[in-house]
Length: 519
Image 1 (cartoon, one colour):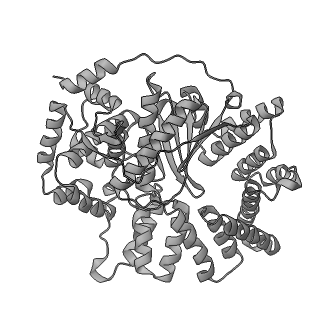
Image 2 (tube, one colour):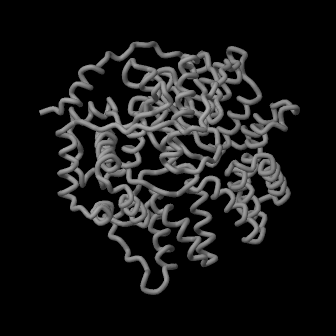
Image 3 (cartoon, one colour):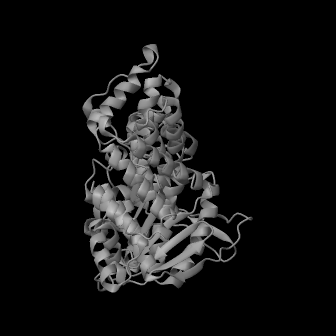
């Protein structure tokens, strides 16, 4: 028997998918930039609607920071808000365009979110708000830290928070049923609890992922709203991050058997009703007044091109974007630099150098040029055998990264590039390690930065610091050889009888990665 509340929600919210024609090229679209105190939204959607979303997002941020008790870093998040599934697919590729409605990534150059404003239904405004709240929850949960949450809770909590709505009297309410998760629960049934608790992004199919989101939301709702065990759950998170078995550690932390939890879990579904929690928006909050302006076509194309290269989701689209810009006479030096960055990433250093050489001298002092130029020089030296590297060129590269660090110290990639150039110039370990640590502090979830730092700390036999870096890194590594190597290094530095007992290969657990989230 279908739960009544869930059934009614499905019946009354069912709508037909809206039909819309795909643009031939993302460059043909009209793009806007919406700025608020804490968000920069680039969109080809309705700018008035997106402005309203930005105001809601500022409200959400004020409440969520207080509820989650996270530090306000003041970092502005960039959000790419695609008007429809066609333009969304142009940004992320056809496969992700069909499987997701939003994405979140942390990179060494900063974090960004991406949403499809239309979602899976025609109810653009409501769905867009839920997607934005979901993705921003990931940002607040993972930005600037190395804590990992199990897949079901990472997505379940983001779904729970995405239902926040606001009242005219300055209040909010939270805990409603996410519509699409109701569909999933009714038509596929909740995922068995043990399977849900052991689910990772690696061991679930695309079809099962929707069950993880829906079932994870329902279990999260029980934990936060009904179980009375939120403090105990924090003990589970700590144990989970230390590598404990996800089922056994949850049973221990909550002092409940899996069977007892399964009963509570099943009862929630059968009842199908969920309580709301209400509160007030913090008194110090002031309503945002986002400003909106239309981007010049050349600026918009460069912006979209930069996203395609940075994200790596659909780099093939960059070629058609550049062709369109050339044909329409709306290319720009900034787009040329984006193309040079793309060529650098695939090792076409000579062509990337030619592209940068074509950029007018007056534009070469700008950050978008300086960054690409520095990384081109560094990657060329990295790809050159050690004995053949050019010290003079490496010193130039070092100086370029010094300039970037001095003028944009918040960006981890500048510090990382500086550390690499110093290491290749044979600086003492403690000197380049200082730069590497600065990169890690700004982007602790970037695997390549964390791996290098962990290796250096292992060589120094800095047990405490190495352990802090290596433990969360183990949960990020997908390469089995790298995983086993890091685990062996961690075990080697454990004091005396506290050495880790090696797990069987089949016992390995991978957490939901903090670097990439999707809905």
